[in-house]
Length: 423
Ligand code: AMP
Ligand code: GLY
Image (cartoon, rainbow, N blue to C red):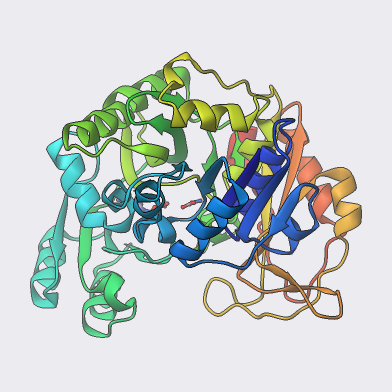
């Protein structure tokens, strides 16, 4: 069969790479892909993004199914458009994707279905927002309502920071229309984890647990990013936590969407805060796989990913299982100079061949310069995954693998998975 993956990041490289390992697959097209997907066996980049052009391509190529990586096309209704054209596509509809594309929608949905999450209020008026935080006190969390590529959240430890974030979003328009409405919510404490599942409209198949590292610098310092590294499994997700997340968060979403007449199909990602008693709270929903969580998780998946997606498209996840490697996988993101503000582009990247002998290098912000040199073309450039029989070994492998890689201004965290070491 021929497949299509939509997206250009490390997540899409990992998903397409995994799909291509299936004997059933002849070729996986990636739209638009990156220099990593361009170099991979059985993968082929195509430079299309318009929905109608993609639909035309799928019809001409007789694509068996399309898998959508990022949130933007989901929020733009790509699944609705493909479905209307009679094409198989795996991802949530535009309606369901509001769980990610509008924080206000997600909070109201959680409230309606008694899903545990921080108390909140939504504002478009800056004066009212200032009054609310003055009354609530710090720490407090200010979030742009719309999509902001992981950069729309200010965890304000002081009232000053909170007032500044409100002014920046509601008065200075710093996030554009995404920040024209803000959600202000209570500060939650605990350990974060990513809980990602496959949903077929009715049934749920959990993926392996993982933990992301959102801050730019070691020891969770510096600004929030799209994610600087991830590992799987995450010891914070104990069997008891797993069961509570399924019962209190995931299944209520699936049933709530069914009841609303919009069955949820696709990957569903709950960003969790697990408190000291083991109670899980929802920080956010994403309507897709995580990036960089996908990279280590796909390295541990032993089941044919094509079989999982085909089962999900057929509504048969209740009779489907996923087998995971017993090994731990640790993925470290290598980011460009200036990330997450303004990333410098054009620096040439060296050392990938040596790195790939030790671990697996997934590309994100890379492109091939006309003279064939590999260059930086985005904020998060690469994600290097190491595997090992425990966290310490996997971590060691990941850092050994990235050691030969070099580009000017390369930034990475030195402590990915450190939190799991003493568990
Ligand atoms: P989000 O984009 O909503 O996932 O938020 C980005 C990051 O901000 C999360 O991964 C958390 O580290 C932090 N964060 C978001 N909401 C809260 C909250 N209510 N309490 C504490 N930290 C939060
Ligand atoms: N790694 C966090 C995300 O994908 O949103």
